[in-house]
Image (tube, rainbow, N blue to C red; front, top):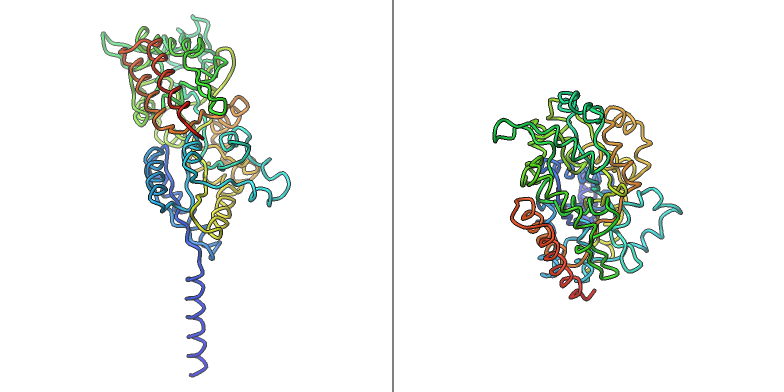
Length: 428
């Protein structure tokens, strides 16, 4: 009996020592498309904790990207940062300006040669600043063009008479306008079906895509260059104004969250939206749909989007090491592929596409290939310190144009002046 009691005490002491030695990581994360995906993140953290018993990741769902960034900033200013977080990619310079995060170069250098080759260059681009890599891709996407194949078939004769193919999506700005005009359905003054939706909310991201398609850019923070007053940006916003206010083939303003609801309800034949909306459309649409590259003008082009992992200063080296281990696990081929299947985000690790379960999934859901293939035309998303303030200026002015309250020229003039001032004041 004494031996058994001794063994029981020894086991309990071992458990106490193990638990006390466990490294606990506080992990802030957003869900940019659908709140229920929080359950998927929680499950992934549970699996990591089971496989890595020396570490305990505590996931903290913080809402959308803006909510998460505010909580991160508040915690950093209070000198109580999380250990690791996923932040919207444009916020990198904001975190660098307050010296909140560590570079990851030393960790990457310890990996096998060619480690970074596993990851899409278009997704790594928003990780670099001042010659170092500060963030790592996780939930990443591009906007794509969704189209309702049933509505295209319904208008097949009219589309063919206009020289358009009802079996594919528009490939150019010109075709986008022509398709949208024919696909719009009205009854008196009521619009039953819009040809397309240019969504609000994240319209700064969608507008950046149009400017890229016109061969230009909006912000190059490294060069302290703001380019909203360019001819290319003006042409893009004039097109938005025409689609929304002149032709009335796109609603004057649809919140980001409502856009998918309208599309699956058959209220729009096309929509610009993140690949992160693919699972919702697939599960809820009662019609055939497909996705395509964003229509080009002088070139194909899109900014990438989504969130990156960052590791914070002000925590122990032990925790920073554990955070990198967690990042490596979450972006491994197996778990990056799992997250892609569950969320609709692109699998950031290219090796994930070689897994049997991923090949089967992609065969059954080929629309997921479009975003990956569009990465050959992808650009880094614009970044700058105080990006939330920049976003607010952009969305306010873009909303005003879409609602017919402001001319494209005046909106871009105001954006140029206000955003240039923010960029010039930044000291990082």
